Image (cartoon, rainbow, N blue to C red; front, side, top):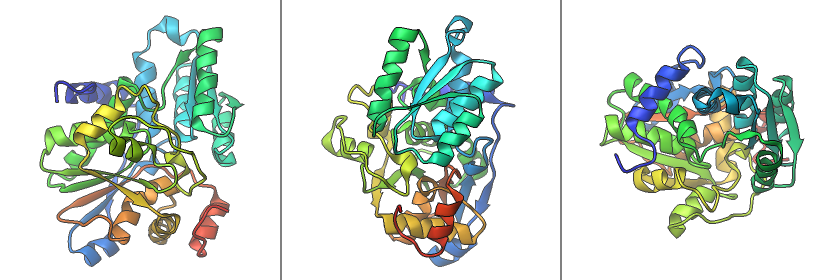
Length: 326
C-alpha cells in the first residue's frame, strides 16, 4: 500500500480536513434484495450529500489543500456534471472564482445547478476530453488553478473518506460495489477498504457504452474510448492517457469490473425508485449488477448510491418502463 499514490493516512487526513463541510451520509438496508439474495444488502446513500453526489468530498479536500495565492487566481475544472457542481459549491464557500468546463453531453439540469452555485460555465465540444482542452487553455492563458475531476491525490483522498465510513458502519462487509468512471471514487474507496478490511472485495461497476477505465485495465494501460450517451452519464469520459493516480490504484486494488446494459441500469433505477431512492443512473449500477446476477453476494454487500442528480422527467420515464436515454 505504501507504494501507491494515495494512502490510508492521506484519506484519514482528508476526513479531518473536510469535517463540518461535508455530510456523513446514512447507510440503510435494501430489504427486498436482502431477502432475495440471502445476505445483507446495504445502500450507502451518498446522493443525500449537500450537492447531491459524492464529488463534494474530493472537491472540498482539494480546494482546502491549495495555498491562498493559487486560490486567488480562481479554480477551473472539467466535469460530466457532479464534480463541477461540487467545485462550484466548495469555491462559493471559500469565496473563490470557479470556472466549470462541460461537454454538450452533460444534462441540462446539471448545467443549471452549476450556474446556480455561481460558477462560470463553458460548454466545449462533445466529450470530456474536449472540455479538458479548455481547462488546459484556462490554466495556461488565464493563470487559473486546475481541480482535476479524479486524477489527483487530494481529490482521491477526499472520495476515499467514503471507504472509512463504509467499514465503520459495516465492519463485516464482504463486498463493496462502486460506480466506476475515472477511478477517483473506486480507487479512493479501495485504498480505505483494503487497508481496514483486506478480505473485502471492491468491484467497479460501469456501463457498456464508453467504459474507459474498464477498457484501460483490460489493455494494461490508459486508452481512449468513444464517449456515448448513457443513463449512467456521470460515468462518461476518458481517464487521460497520462493518468498517474487512479489507473495505478484501480489496477492494484480492484477485484474486478462489471459492465451493464442500458436496460440493466434502468432496472436498477426502478428498483431503487420503488424504495424511495431517486438516483441517477451512475448511482444505480451496483444494485443493477446484483439484480442482473452479474455480481454474487457472498456476505454483507454495500452498494454505493453515488448521486441523485437525475432530471425528474427522465426518472419518471424510467419508472414508467423506459430503458434507454431519449
